[in-house]
Image 1 (tube, each protein chain N blue to C red):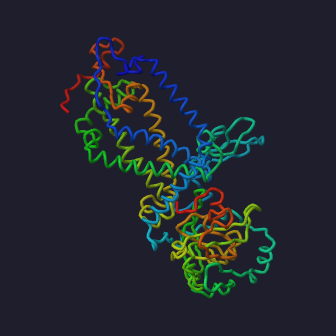
Image 2 (cartoon, one colour):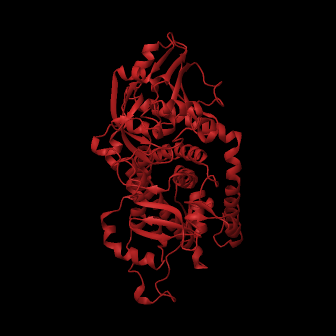
Image 3 (tube, rainbow over the protein chains, first blue to last red):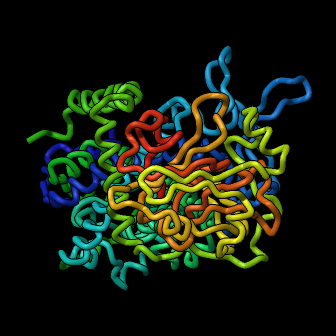
Length: 298
Length: 256
């Protein structure tokens, strides 16, 4: 079971404190909020399942649309159009549900909150979760900067860029750092977390605010920043898909790089640092071995 | 200290997470309907209203666009052709017999014809209409600034809301109505429009008169307005939540 980062016999793992209490709290509150925001967001999207670019909606030329159409035999098909492309998405997008009770709806009932078509409640969930998510995000970003964690843990050091290729190769092979190397985020982790924390998350909040007519009156620069309300709506959707993609990759990597250890570090803060593997690893070809670990002083 | 080799605990953890997820999904709809959540949702909406009122000043304007931005056809939503007999008769007569009644907590209740409204100072604005469903449409509106009309009838001090009573019964059900508070009613862009894109307001878009509240969502902007009533509270109207859609679970504060 190498998947769980099992300690080798005879080599004790050291427990280190990996995540502060506030980081852990933010992580789980944020996780719950994002699930609610995504599912209620899909419920809201279903009320008008099309995306546009610009100030308003050009109904005959959406950038994306999800609908149902009858095929040559008169049977319903779920059709998703992106730009000029047409995809048959029957069963998931456009038309879904049990075979004897197919429902015409953009996103299926299992993906939306509430399950049935219910725009008003979808909006209620979305804004309630938004009121927890956005202030928590703001607080967390301030915390990262003020506590110095942003600089210490997330901003890449210059020397790290030299190992970019190596880090990518190790990731592709699902070889994760051990020992001292595992004490810090590697470059790919740093870049991903920076993209999410300083890119996708603030952007999803701001594009969301741009859809509010009162916010557009209060902060007209929002409209200029995102090219109009409908562009903002499209960007909001793209950010949500980006966050979902991050979540899935994050989840997969958490599982393959020692799920139990990772989960514990995000619950209790403690993370087991496993000793580095001996240089002669029987199951890996010697040419694929990473170069000697450089000593780190921080 | 838990050992990472403890596979029993790992399995337990995985199963708990999965079972928790399933229960959560099943419980969500029940939770959505619960009184506790309703209270929480109302509190969240009140918070949104207060925050947005804090950020948007009394006078901060919705963006106005150029004639080039006007959509070729302005999308009509909700009722697009009221079939109530009284309304049909008025429409057949070109709304010559239509009168806008203004009453309730006012000093001088009035009934104004369309021509009388058109002689009042008008405002023309090219604005974006945002539907709660998510789409937007840009159109040019011309009409009477609501604040001017309210000054003309003399609003009494007790009045807190302006209620708009409409001719249509959406899907044959309850009469459509909407309400604004005094702050939004006196906003310089809040108007009763009788023209769209340079022509008389079409029936599909609310002829002869519809509300424009440009910092709010589309459902606030009542079409087929017949009567304006100034009230201290709207709890006695409809189901008491301030509007047709509000009575069906949508927020009274439609700034988001």
